[in-house]
Image (cartoon, rainbow, N blue to C red; front, top):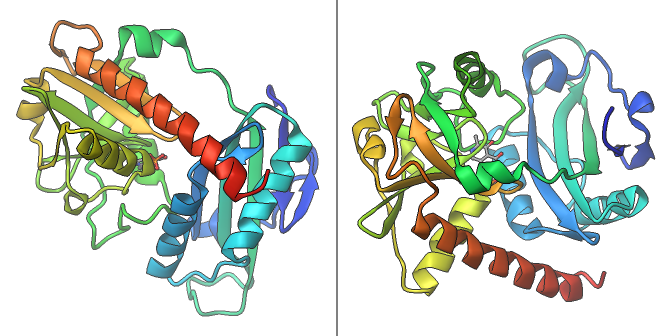
Length: 298
Ligand SMILES: Cc1ncc(COP(=O)(O)O)c(C=O)c1O
């Protein structure tokens, strides 16, 4: 393992070599689990309340009981990253339906597993932000909402793994996935945005996507600052004709997209509106850490 990593399994913190769960765990067998990814800075978790809300929502949508309550999960995060001791940490919280007899039946007797993976959060390459990235539109259709609902952050990511594989084989950074109606849904681990005539547009939740916490923060922040923010369906043709395109996620923040398939976006450079939004968002992040530091008494 290249970076410093610690794993908390059901409250016990161990090194990666000792971090094991049963092969009978349903997370391993069926992807029957929910998860969240957040980060910490100087030991302070980022947007913990929003991540807990989404974890609870994902768990309740698939009827998976969470083994710990909100305060317990927050404390596990705070204590585990303290042991890791890095300034910036990646935090993955996984709750599985657990282990028992091999059966698809989710009501069978089983004991859930809680797994928290923390590692040093790497600095992402500067060129992603300074030069932008190239995305492909995937042939793999994003799961239908009445199938494995994309609004549930479950451990079943095969849909996204297949799209990412397609992007990598093409030499691209990542893939944009369309929904069953052929409209933009999201990236494989990010939400997608375009800017047209100074208006920021991202697909609505009912396009079938994960309600990203960064996505919601940007919608709120933009509206509070008088920017034009819209949730509207976007076709592949519209996104390719946009002035600017970018993706958002908790750890990557805002990454400009300068090419989609063989179409150059704007002037092939990260756009001014994208940069402006990122600067505002980084200020919001700093303010958030400050208020969380006093709220959580860290
Ligand atoms: C499928 C998918 N969409 C969107 C996102 C972005 O969500 P957030 O901004 O909460 O990190 C993620 C995050 O990993 C994701 O997996």
